[in-house]
Image (cartoon, rainbow, N blue to C red; front, side, top):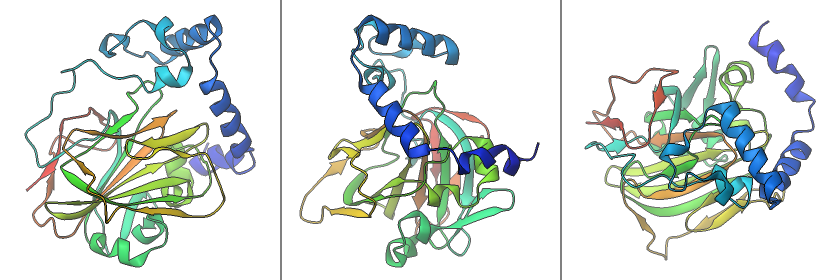
Length: 282
């Protein structure tokens, strides 16, 4: 079966309704029923609770509390690298942005302008920059951390579809990451601006950042933007910056000004990655 045929049902599924329902279930505090749901999930997806700061699933009041669980101190040491991997997960794609176009999968590219919400000025520094698309599977740790030091400049919530973001869908849905709902977080760093895009998906109940809290819901059907020019919100490399309430994908954009940047030579599409490992540097 072709990838496009495999994803065809997603075009007609009531994705918004399913996602809203999943959000309600994930937030529910139902005692023993919640614990049974968490226990099933741990078995089904092979979640390593030995890495969790609290390994007792009965201590999580809701599924979302479990899903966004913290890690034990020291289980993700930070590499000595200019840019570290911001998440646990798997590499979807990475490499050079060519004339503002980002590689998604064979036969599919999309524009950096579309990804960041249609703002050409915001996308301009990344015209010939670098990107990494990182997929978080259900079993993974779902907090997102800073790849380098940065000062927060803007945050944009872009409404959109809620296709799945798994590898089959990435191969089958053109412009997937610029079509789905997303939260665009813009920072200023030592090499200039960089962006972390938190991409929503089917069943992703919401996305949150450490400076704002839950960004969605509400889903108001229009682009919303927050500017932080007059605030001094500084985050250090390795600091938590956000989280997914149920899983999804992060797209990292690094500027063309990062001349001589090279990705970790061990990286390859499909490879498992861990928060804190080397991602890129000069």
